[in-house]
Length: 249
Image 1 (cartoon, rainbow, N blue to C red):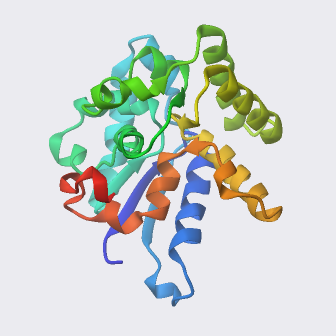
Image 2 (image 1 turned 60 degrees about the vertical axis):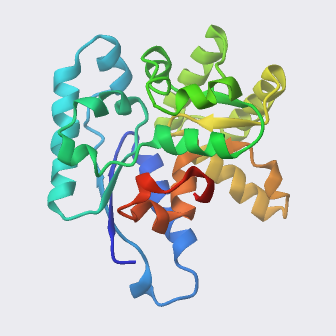
């Protein structure tokens, strides 16, 4: 795999570190280690809180931090870049074109998967992503909105707080998964969209429990863009990815 992936992480740091682990678990398959993907993780937890800054309309400092970090990754000759924070995708239209063309949108990855799959989905996200309508600004939203359910205000606030507890390793994963399964019943959905990279940690935990107890992989409840990328990395590193028809992703 010649192309190199750049990851801007630290938002939060546990999720982006787990993403790197997931990539290697799915792309080191008994071959020699030299065949494994080349990855640069720039984990910068000092980047200001995206929800707080964006909801206050304080874009400049956050945008400067993000562009500077992505520029540093680009200078290291990475082929594609993933920003491990969905809320920050709100600022992608403000990025310089040469940087923006390297970024794989986690929003678009999620919505492409919704297009390809049957069923209804509950969107899990921070209050920032929800209020700024980060998913709704994607060109794919109109084709998928009938399949996506947004939680009510009470549940949205609970999800937001749960995400922030996961960031600092203070959330019980078992209780979080029970809560999400109850939400799925309440909203009559088949799956939940990981509209925040912290949810990737729950997905990875659930997979580990399924494997440990020889459960059915169909019990996995997450549509997780980070896991989708980890399992199909070569396609996403391809320069012509954006031209690949949805049906063969």
